[in-house]
Each structure stands twice: as structure tokens, then as C-alpha cells.
Amino acid sequence: MKELSFAIFGTGFWSQFQLAAWRELQGARCVALYNRTRAKAEALAQRFGVPAVYHDPEALLDKEQLDFVDIVTDVGTHAQFVELAAARKLAAICQKPMAPSLEIAQEMVETCRRENVFYAVHENWRWQTPLRELKRVLDAGDIGHPFRARVDFITVFPVFNNQPFLRTLEKFVLTDIGSHILDTARFLFGEARTLYCCTRRVHRDIQGEDVATVLMEMGPTSVAARSGETSVVCQMAYAENYLEHDRFPETYVMIEGERGSVELGPDYWLRLTTKRGTLARRCPPPRYAWADPAYDLVQASIVPCHANLLAALQGQGSAETSGEDNLKTVKLVFAAYESARTGRAIHFDKDGEHA
Image (tube, rainbow, N blue to C red; front, side, top):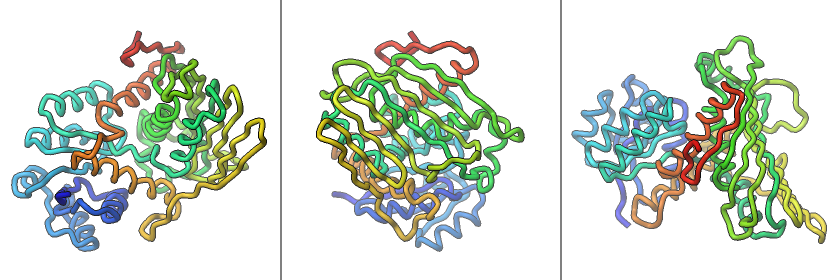
């Protein structure tokens, strides 16, 4: 396959892991970096041997021969850079959350559709090894139709210490971790039919919510699950309270089915229980020397996410987290805020729009 050339926009904390993960794959080469503070881009370029550095995004796009851009900037600039790429018929990948509002996200997807260019969101959470193993067990059908499930990301991790800007966000936990957890629920159980949400602010010195509980009735995603919907509770919190089983950044899942249950618990233990008893096994992620030990579960999932996106860019299948697909997750995030604000359940039609 042809090697694809790309540029990374944004050289903050996550870009080093994004770039390191690309280097784990054959078929893509980073040829340029953009950052508005040039010195930061120069430091990353020197570390990874990237030949070109820019502090002007349009100059980069005008001078470099690229196949795609990988956007790792703050959410408020995603639309700007996606539109710059689309205007030049360049494929674009951007980080989650896609956009600061549903309207902007819809415009981004429509722009790329109109320009007929590839667009995807780097939603790597669903690519975590234990979650992929859980999906395989669920699809195998041993537990029958999953009628109830819980997806939990509740941690004492002091996220505000290393990302203090999060304190100032008016919308926090649902856009930050909720983008991942609601997407994981879609990955496991299909599309939401109804949604109800309540939020809390435990930290008194922050602007947004740090606790959210979302209840959804979700549709099937596999032959094994076609007999009905699944009641799914997603619990998210950065409350920094004391928890016995907290292992940041693990996601815990409990699924009850008509013929059994399956649980993803602490330390990557997957337990499948049926009339034959309980089968337990660990599903740890691969380890990479470049990963931050505090985030290695999440950062390891960047590699298979990259692999899926690269294959799609090379014409080998489709992107699992295309812009069109991730827009469905964005709709859930903002529907959750609407539900929390109004105290009402949100209903969706078959196309994922408000009924």
C-alpha cells in the first residue's frame, strides 16, 4: 500500500502519544507539525524527527504534500481546521469531542460530505483491549439477549491537577468522559431510543458538572441481541471521593442477559457466568514504552484506532468512528445536557433525531 503523508495540528500533551502510536504502524509518515506556539512544535519535531514545523496552518497546507491531517488541538478549533482541510480536498481526523456544540458538529460533517472528503473522529476508547473482548463475548450470544447493563467510569483521579483548564468548562464531565462512555454504550448496545440524565457538581470550585448519570433504552447491534432493547445506565464521575475498586482509567461494565451475565471488572478481569458456571480471564492491554503509566490503558488503544482509520484511508474498509457515526454520539451528549436541564426524557426516532 502507498505510504500516506500527514501533518499533526496541535502539539500539546496528547500529541506525543498520538504521534508515537502512528509510529507503531506501517503506511503513514508524519511530515509536518503545526502549533500556534512554534517552540512547542519544534520541541516535538526534534524529539520525533519530523522534518517541518509551522505556526501558520494555511502555510503548512499550502506547502506540504499531504494525504490527511490529524487534528489534536482544543475542541474550539476543530471546525476551523477540518474546514481548512476539506477546502483542499484533504482527509481529516480530529479528536473528541468533535465540537463545542451539536450545530457545529453537524456543519463539520456536512462540509466534509459536500466536499467528498474522508472525515473521522479519533474515538479510541472503544478500542481498548478489554472492551473489545467484552464485545466479542456479548456478540457470541452465550448470555442471550442483554436486557440490562451498567457502564461505569467513576474515579478518584485528580484530573484537575494536570488539566486545570477543565475547572473553567461550563460543560465538563459529559463532554469530556461522557463522549467516550456514551460512545462505548453505542458500540456495545446499539442506538438510543430514549435518554434521561441527571448531573451534579461535587467540586464547588469548578464551572461545570463533575458527576452524571444517564439512563438509556438502546437498540440491538448483533443477531444475538435482536429480541429487544437494553436498559443501559452510564455513570460518570470525577468527584475525587473514596472508592474501593477505583483503577483509573478503567471502565467497568456489568451486563445481564436472559441466559447469563458478563462483567468487566477491576484489573481487566472478564467474567462470563452461565448455567455452566463462571469463566474468568484477564484481558490486559498491550504495553508501550512511550505510554504514560497513568494512562497506558487508554494510550494503548490509540494504536488499533489508528490502524482502523489508516486502513479506511487506504481504501481497505470503512472507519468505525467516521464523522457520521460519531455525530450520533455527539447527539447523545447534548441530549443528556437537555435532559438534565429540563428534567425530561429525550426520545429519538429511527434516524437518531429527537422524536
